[in-house]
Length: 75
Ligand SMILES: [Zn+2]
Image 1: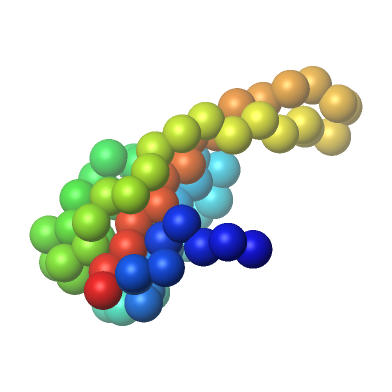
Image 2: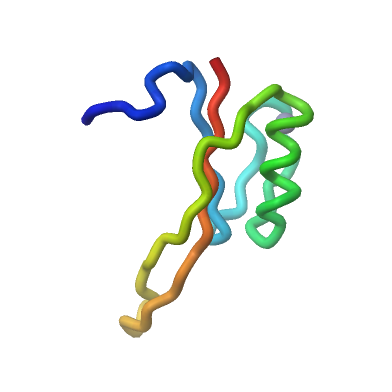
């Protein structure tokens, strides 16, 4: 794929649909705290916010649900 984020060596994706932990320091990245998670990567690890957007998905019953996703990158 053509890589619009090609300048960045490290890319992280955060979603309101996924609870995970920070790739660098294992801080919990809770799905409901998107802004806090974005700030964590920027403040603690020097990432830049590259993209915030909505993402449509479907639940088990076929109902449409929307997540917010953020992409951060570091050179
Ligand atoms: Zn961290």
